[in-house]
Image (tube, rainbow, N blue to C red):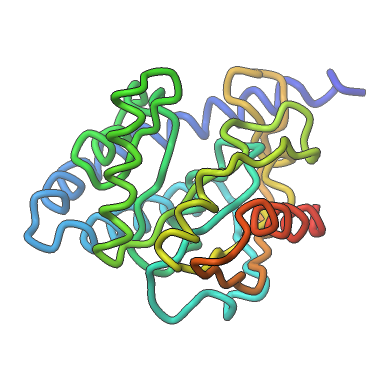
Length: 242
């Protein structure tokens, strides 16, 4: 049964990649103007939202936001989400209503087009195996929170190997939440892995559809909040909708 629809899934992924590149190239001048604007963070957030909307529209992906009202009326806050599809990243730009810095693994610097936001300090690459650069990433994240920018992160630290089963969360996001006394906004991407799997898996999931995104109630953090307890509560909330 797996191989029956494989050619169609492959063609959809090729089409998706074409839309990503063509729309990105067309919008690239807009991106460059945004990141050089005096209000570059908000302008870049708008540019990424436009790009996300274009990709979703052209690839026939409709987003169903459940409990959108749970987002705080203003930042800063830390968005934590499960990660099982590259579609998660694109939808982050569409779903989160305020300016935010996206924390992504350093490999994103090799990705065409989207890397312009990481190279220009709109978003923050995370280096896990180089201490000096890792410390610099933490410094930039703390600075973003101090400047009232929100943060978006996948606390698993990588994409799930066997979705929807999540990996254990790392402590980083929750340590920052406690240190800066900002709330956690847990998000569950309920079925992105069924719509678009790893792009290197040519025959894996790839099709149009409705991406269901569940926004959980915020979890407040304070200086005395226990980090492990905060981490586990966030995990449980996200996992409850998978």
